[in-house]
Structure formats: C-alpha cells, structure tokens
Length: 203
Image (cartoon, rainbow, N blue to C red; front, side, top):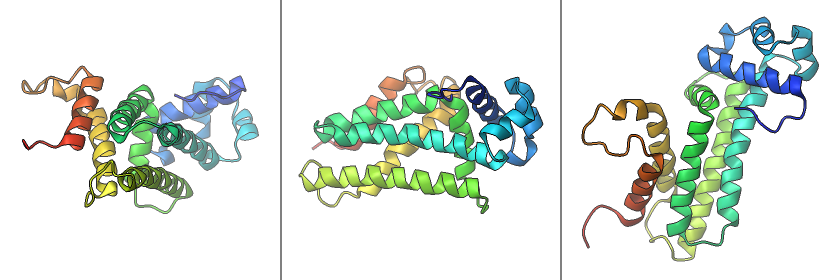
C-alpha cells in the first residue's frame, strides 16, 4: 500500500491505481476508472501525474524504494552475516506480504518482455536492488564470513526466490500435510536462512 504521501488526493489516486493495476492489465485500466475509485476527477489525476504511464511508474518506483530501504538497513548493519541474512529474509517477506497488491503488480511487470517505459523502470530498478544485495554478500565473503567458491548472486537468488514463492503459494500450503510453516512466515524465513547458511548435510 502506498504510504508517505503528503497530499491526500495524491495518496488516494496512487492507492486506487495500485489496486486497479494489480487486478487488471495496464492497458485495461483507464484514468476514468482510477478517478472514480479514488473519488477525484480525471483532471485532478493529470494535475499530479502527466499521464497514465507516469502514474504507473510512480507506483513501481515506490515499490522499489521500499526494497531499497531494506538493503540500506542491511548494508549499514554491523552484524555478522549469520545475523544479517535471517533479518533481511524476514523483513523482505514481511514487505512482500504487507504490500500484497503492489507485490502482485510488480511481479507481473517483471515477467513482461515488452519495451514499455514502465517495464524498463521495474526491471532496471529491481536489477539495481539485486546487484546491491549481491555486493553486500560479496563484502561478507571478502571478510571471510561466507566461504570462498560460494556464488553471492546465487545466494541472493535463493533468498529472494524463496520469499517470492512463499508469497505466491502460501495459501495452498495448508493443503500439504508435510508443510508446518504455512501460517508462520517467520518460521519459514528462519528455516530458509538456516538452510542457506548451514546447508543440509551433516558435517
């Protein structure tokens, strides 16, 4: 959900647009629909945003900024990797779950192959966040906290991918008797982090 917007009209426009864009494709949503749901005029939307694409880009940018803040906190932390990874994994999943509408929207956008400007905004910005996570892990590796030979990009992929899968499939987990973490995201994150940190084989 959109937060930290000072203008109430702008907040309502962004919140309405988030919901509609997540429910439908970009091309299927009109400014008139957004205006109706937000309780404002179409002219009011164009006062805050130059176009529908500009509004869409603002929503994607906000989602990217939320994830950037998590990485900034991780980067500024003085803790050991064995503390940072579980902390980041929990915070990342909570962010995905708390902002479920925008998560659905951005995941859909990242899967597109088109060249629309908003697609490029999503891909480029999320690529920067991914690279930053990789660099944080590389720094830990250089300090001797992560074994040589481990690929930091693979670790980042496993962390993010595990959380994205939980977000997409957690409602179905209750149908699998072997899964005990369906209703406990924190427990899931702890197990994911521990598996990545310590592996599955006995020494």
